[in-house]
Image (tube, rainbow, N blue to C red):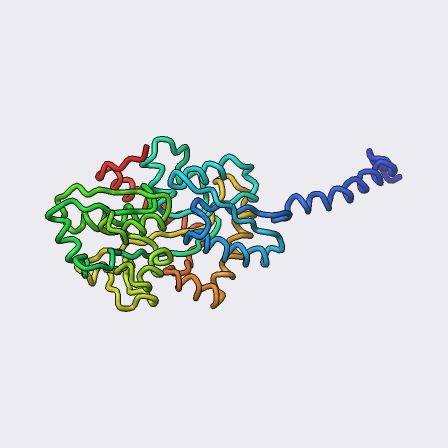
Amino acid sequence: MKPSFRDPISRGRRVTLMAMLAGALPTLARAQAYPARAIKLVVTQAAGSGSDVIARLVGDRLAEALKQPVIVENRPGASGIIGHQFVLGAPHDGYTLLMSSTANLLVVPVMASNARFRYTDFTPVAALLESAYVVVVANAPGKPSTLKELLDAGRTRPLSFASSGTGSMGHLGAELILERAGSPQRHVHVPYRGSAQALADVVGGQAAFAVDTLLAAEPLIKGGRLRALAVTSAHRLDSLPEVPTLQEAGLPDMDVTTKAGIFAPSDVPPVVVTTISTAVSRILAEPNVRATLRSLGNEPSGLSPAQYQASLSDEAPAWERLVRRLDLRME
């Protein structure tokens, strides 16, 4: 006689459990699907800024790729602190992302006592670009015509220089250039709430020079109101082929660039990073997107999220040393 085994789950209960499981599968699938609704991409600069233009370019293409709206929301102020802390305060579910850069992540938290974040609070979701800057003065009689003339003037008297904000890459780029030139003076930094105001005061003679983005400076250069003395990249820019690099202008082995990308809080679900980075990689491979980024003085990034994170970790100590050495503070 064969032994018999009694099923502890009755046929009726088994049917009920199978029905419950079948009903739960669509819910589980929806919970794992990303994105299932609109994504907010926070930009820490004003509408019309370089970051804003790039965020909208990438955001529009990302919306097409993901089949969900990508809403660019500007939250400028306090050198990016407002936008960064807004994203950290939102749910960490991948539906509130941040466009940020080297200065915002690595410099501002060191300078500002009211910054309640560090770069380690965020994880790179997608690397977007690396960008250069332009050293400009007013295009007027008596103004320097070369970077050497500007730096020579700075060795004999303090210069005022404008930037789009304390801790911005334009601010730090100017400090680095003056320091590398061996200037003994304590120069005067004049921060503004954006590039437009900063460059207007350079044109008007209230500030001796500025280091700013190609997007902000090029119209004034082409219009004859600003004079470009140097670009901060290792190679000349296609849009300003006649303007020398810092190295060509007399500062060996020097370039000042910043990386920018899309970030999320560090504990965001991994599917967010995978989904966004894959889509952005395809977007950055498109010829028209690459051409647009390069026309704005940027080089499309080829870094993976892990490589971008490693780059931030490598750069962070150097930027912190610079801030401490120059005793830069933002109240």
